[in-house]
Amino acid sequence: MAGEATRRSSIRSKWEHTFVTYPPYVRDKARRMRVERDLTIDEITERLAISRQTIYSAFRDFICMYIGEGYKRNRNRVSLGNSDPYVVRLAAHFIRRFSRNRVSY
Image (tube, rainbow, N blue to C red; front, side, top):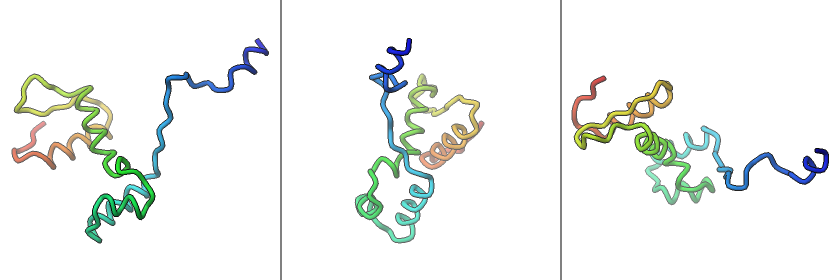
């Protein structure tokens, strides 16, 4: 047992990846730079030394949630079922943002 514990240096599996996430204030600063200074995404990422995916992480989260939990049998309807308040707020935000029709629950 003792030899086994010293051989294994990490509790992570070899296929598990670690992703870098930035604090929320960095994403907020990037959004402010986009709105207030009208900077392009490339200018923002260069000035903050971050990746482009950092700025689009919320939209990517919505897409992943829709792929995993969305209703896809009707191409004219977007719906997502989840009990997590963050996921519901995220879905409602992007559904309203990209929809021309009235959103109903």
